[in-house]
Length: 394
Image (cartoon, rainbow, N blue to C red; front, side):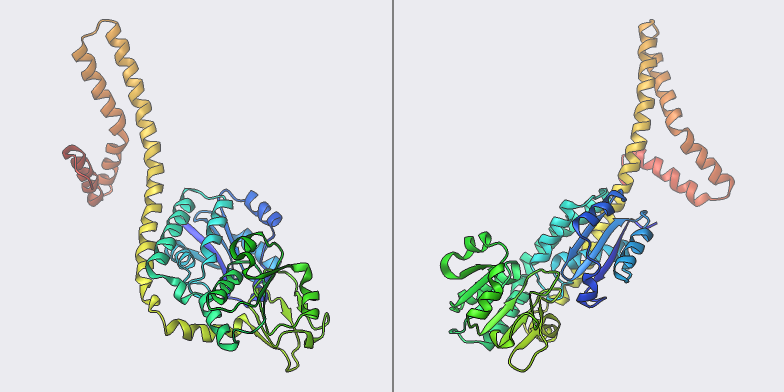
């Protein structure tokens, strides 16, 4: 039986608009958690994933996903599920390699989840490995933010007026790179501005998201980068004249935040169009894919930890049983001693009784295996006893 499993839907399986239909809101996720003893749900712009114990029944959850979005997840088991999460935390499964935000998203998902011991081992190990892997290989040099910033700066000059819509890691990362390279005419529009104000101070102009349409109609921008989470388009052809828009719009939102027909005046570059140039960018700068053997080795280590934790649970039950027997024997021995019986006799009787009660079922099983002609198992059980006698570790 499997130890862990993952229900996986990503940009590799479905286009982003279809994938967006499978997102569950907080209230919906709460109900899903209530119906499971153990579960961790991971939802990002490019993936919807559920991690469960291996003995959990995933069929009801699959039916729920299919009913909501009309799609079915891939189901990964044990090593495949573990390797997948490791690829996620390292950023190697992201649409754009080295994405930094995904590791924070995994941490938040784990913190909000309902993990069993198995899932706790899986997520804590995967998060630690992801952090270590990123430190060792400096994935920022091939990150999507670095690529997109370089891509943008090839298409505009330092005098360009730039509008950035969004305040997440991608949007802030692009602004950092622009400012570092002396692109100083930058305006940021976002729902909340405190974090942006704290980071950039007066080096950028800040506006609330409710001012976006008015800003586009009254100010002239050369370029707009849209990297914001939204369920509905922020900009569409019905709402405004294309001539009010910048000539270059790069929309990396999922789902897309810009819906324009296009008339030649405005060039809109969407996330999907950047995949091929990004891969060329990565291939020219890194051999990170060669490090996948590390993922394999770490997945095997985590699998062994999970299996060991299952054994630990069984061992705790066995030790509890043995402790109950020991306490019964101690009580009987103390009673015998208090009645004046010889101490040597009492200790001898207690040790014999203790060994007999603990070993009875073990020895009976040896007899049954011998009766069935299974001498290999008999010899294995005997060797375990010899190891106990000699104090060896298997």
